[in-house]
Length: 577
Image 1 (cartoon, rainbow, N blue to C red):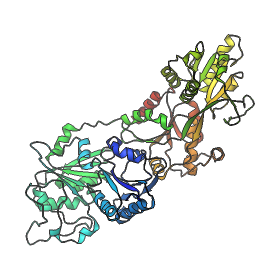
Image 2: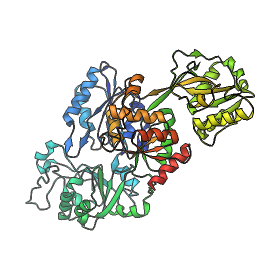
Image 3: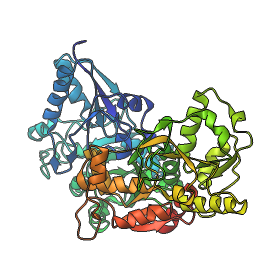
Image 4: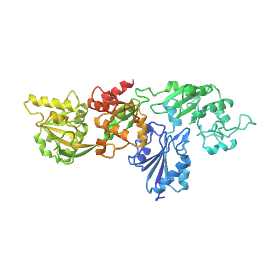
């Protein structure tokens, strides 16, 4: 067994990433291979190790992308070909609640492959709870029964007496449900070709709550058979679509109106059906409020270490957030920009001279143009065995409120913050201050920026010195699952021009293998109306420069009133109100 990889059968839960288990997340973060189903939320796939091999075996209600027998063999194949590997089998809900996890586990046992089951929150209980419907309630239902609306192919030819209702509680403790007919002389028959053998007479007599999973396509037949076998046609019933996600919808009716309700309300999978008196409690107990961004999928393109803040705010407003970092930043040993002032566009770190922190004594103003600049400068500052006293007497300038807040976290109050929170606004403010003091603009100013900063500040402050304290690296590609999630999104959220540039080019070309390729990739607006690029046309921008870049790529732009994350979130909520 030690020569094989280990397989983890992981339940992804009903959809809300907050209901995913800590154990499951820890395994995904170190998995070498992830074999996942269609119903697994993109927000949960985002927990996966970036280097993991992602294998989509997703199933549609009428089309199986990969057959179950092939999935079983695939897990064994990965385990045998990848010694010591971590192989995650990610399944919606719980692996052992109609998830065919038992079938996969038996195949692994047969092949002597070690495995572990990581339970997930089953939709049978969690989805009704999110709709305010308790599956059991004293005085209404003392049991509940989970029933599959589909069966595996082998069952269809079985004799009625060989098939049992699948539930996690019997109608009566002493009774095992057997398949019998409404009438002794009538043999139960296969109906609708995708479901057979359910013990409808026993189900019709059950006083508890009935919960059908994956049964929307067969509900007309199920409702008719239950009523034929004595179930009250007035039994309350609820269909709950896309439960626990921002797209959740509850449609109520009665057993006798179930079929027409599905058609009239266009109820679609994935959905569960719950029958019984507890359904009426949903009117009083529906605790999940309609939020401003409910039903909206937003792509957040900030660097991974910065995305969590805005993602949390958008999620709290009901949005499904797909974090898709288009840039990553990396601190570097501070280097003096030796390309200034002759350079025409950008100066790379390579070839620049290493900065000397002793030279800080030569500067009266330290100007920060991003939170990345703050983080990277102080990382190098403290690494050089300096402390905050080395900055005594310095004036601190910030490009805007977000960077100002980051400096305050370091105990530094800003002396200069422009009303126009852009590089141009900061440059004009510092130039004006210098001129009022009869100084040359930038004469004693140190600019702390990244390698891709443009020449706006150095043009306005020609005597300033620039240190490159971090690099901005573009994302090179998007995995297939994320491309699909982005294509289905309502809008993209941009907080920088570089994120816009890289997003457009990665989506358009599929991947960017190098900085040179990124710069040489076609800048044609792939998001123009006639284009076929799989991306939303609407975007939200945090400032004027980002807006200009987004418009260049054909986006329909909604710009925040201020260059702050709070203002951006507020603008998004207002837009969808």
